[in-house]
Length: 417
Image (cartoon, rainbow, N blue to C red; front, side, top):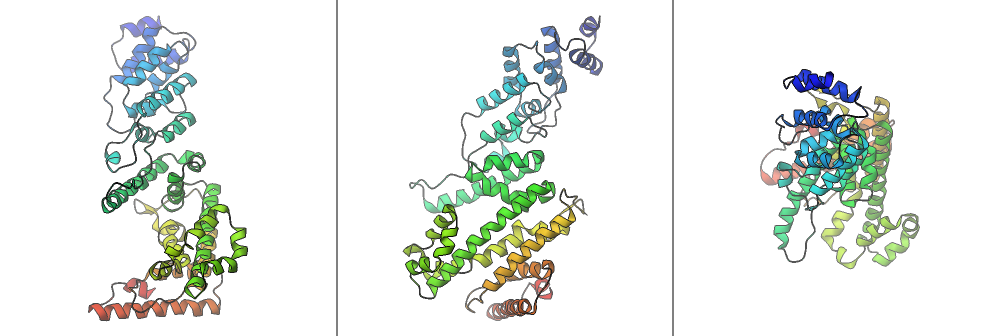
């Protein structure tokens, strides 16, 4: 009787509701194909919104997951679905047969994977659109990751270097933006995404930095602590490069520098040793490069404090609709992480050196110095003395700049701090 009522009823919500009740109730194990097709057609007849995944597609999901649904029909429907609806059908509520079919269809549409480019943010690939859907099934999520655009391409030796650098910068910005979007939507998959990125070097750094620096309020506490600890380890590598480079600057040959820091190199991982060795080549011993390397540890802290660790050091800056964001991590954990970073800042302070008066200076060191003074549990007199050196050097540099260019400093806020 109910099936006949559906045949006779005009299209509308009541008919859809009745079909859903039948397919999940009395007809859960066996249903006529025309009823499955009618359920699917009811959803598909609605116009989708371009590049959005707000469609629930519940009726279609139930129909295509039904054990009476023919495999060929299921594949046929999915081939006609826009990417947004494909993502909606890939939610974890789908049955095993539907999830398998969604993965197959996604891979079919993603046979040609191109390097990331700014255009792909305006006209996203199927995988990008699917990853804009919340609550994806694990298999669909992983398949979409594997189908994403590749990282920025490398210089092939034939393209003009300047042209490549301009294109590469734009591609890198698009790469950062794409992953920022993925991480903001796929909050429940953060740990799985981090595990996946470990075997995809082009993505791992970006994923880690976004978790820590772009959306730390969305990151589960234990994972946030892990990502923060991993990030701080890279400071140790920067310290080693700084110390070795200063030894070479002060007269040691690369070979002698290796001998001096043999124990530290032996304790480092192979990747870290390879990283340090890059800077011990003869071509890396120029004065300009050495100047950069001798400040590497301090620059690491400066960049981390103003970018990667910004919202952990200054939680009040993370706001939504004018109000502080709610965090998964407790205030105590955020404060503890800020203290750990301040300890790193203290190490950087001990490595800090004044730069020549002739070099263009900015107030970049005042940011991490401020973090040190605010978040370090105890500020000793020795620390205060070294902090004063940084402040005095910055004041001198600003005065030199103002005198040279004939206009006052525009860093009054930093100077006041």
